[in-house]
Image (cartoon, rainbow, N blue to C red; front, side, top):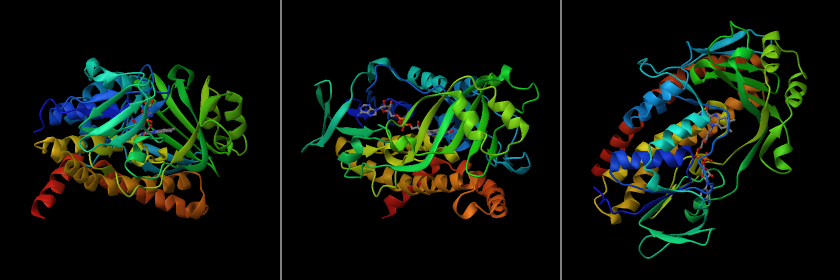
Length: 403
Ligand SMILES: Cc1cc2nc3c(=O)[nH]c(=O)nc-3n(C[C@H](O)[C@H](O)[C@H](O)COP(=O)(O)OP(=O)(O)OC[C@H]3O[C@@H](n4cnc5c(N)ncnc54)[C@H](O)[C@@H]3O)c2cc1C
C-alpha cells in the first residue's frame, strides 16, 4: 500500500479527472490533488449515457445510486430507425445479467455528483498545466499562473488536447471526423405525451439524430450529427441558431415524428467531432494518461466517459498493489497493459458506428448496414456492457505475477 503522504497530481478536473480522484482515494487510499484550468467544474448542458460497463464501476465506487436518482433509466431497449420510421433493430440497453441498465445523465448533474464526492481541499481550480517534466525523482508540473510543484506521479486527465500526452512521448494531433453535432436538451413537456421513454437513433442518408431521456424523464437529450467542414475553420464548438438544425434536416425526407421532435428544440450549440488515433503507450515512468487524453473517441458508441470510468478503477487497483513510490511506474505499465487494447477497439468501433448511422463507406448499402447493426447489438451487450474492468485488472495482475 502506498503511504498516505504520496503526492499524486491529476491534471484536469473533468468527468475523468474527478472520477480518478474518487477511485484513488477509495481503492488505493491515496488522496490525489486535482488541478483544473477553469475556475469551476463545468460541463456542457447536454446528456451523456452511463452504460452498464460503467455502472459496474460506479457501483464499486458508491456512486451508482446517486447517478440513478439524478438520471433516467430508459423504459426498455432502444431502437434504431431509418429516416421514414421503420425499425431496423432494437438496441442493447442492459447487461446480460440484467443488473445494470443504461442511464441517461444530464452532464451538469453528473459533474456535480462527482465534484461533491471529492474532498474540496484536494481540488485546485484555476491551475492550467503548461508543461510536465520527469525529474531524477518524481515529476515537475509548471502552471500557467506561474506556480510550479513537484509530485511523485502525475495522471493526465486533461482531455483530447492533453498537455500531459506530450510528456508521455505520444503524438498531440487529433483527427476530424468530417462531422459536427448539434446538441442540447428538450423539455419533455414540449414533446408529444406518448413520446417513448427510450433511446432512439434515426438514421438518414448522411446524417442521424439520437435522443434519450434524462433527469427522471423531465428532459430529453439530442445529438444531431451532420457532415460539415466548419470545425476546421476556427473554434471546435459554439452556440448555433436552431434554424440551422431545421435547414440541415430538411435536406431529406423524415418521418413526421422527427420533424415534431426537432420543432421542440429551443436552444442548440454545435460541436466538432474529433478523436485521436490509438496511442502506442499510455505511460512513461511516473506519468500516465486517462480518459480522453488517452483514448479520445467520437461519440457514436457513447463510450468515451464510460471508458474513463473503467480507466479509473483499473489505475486505482494497480496503485493499491504498489508498496512504495518506486513501484508506481510498474503500476502504470500494468494499467496500460490492461486498458489500451480495450479502448483502441472502442475508438475504432466508434468511427465504424458513425459510418453505419450515416450510411457511409461500406454502409451505403443500407441492407448490409441493417444486418450489421442488428448483429452489433449482441456484440455490444456481451463485449461492451458485460465487461468487468476490475476483474480484468485482477486477471492482468495474475499474468504479471506469473511472468
Ligand atoms: C456529442 C457528444 C456526445 C457524447 N456522449 C457520450 C456518451 O453518451 N457516453 C460517453 O461515455 N461519452 C460520451 N461522450 C464523450 C465524453 O464526453 C468524453 O469522453 C468525456 O467527457 C471525457 O472526459 P475527460 O475528463 O477525459 O476529458 P474532458 O471532459 O475533456 O475534461 C478534461 C478537463 O481537463 C481540463 N484541462 C484541459 N487541459 C488542462 C490543463 N492543461 N491543465 C489543467 N486542466 C486542463 C479541462 O478544462 C477539463 O475540465 C460524448 C462526447 C460528445 C462530443
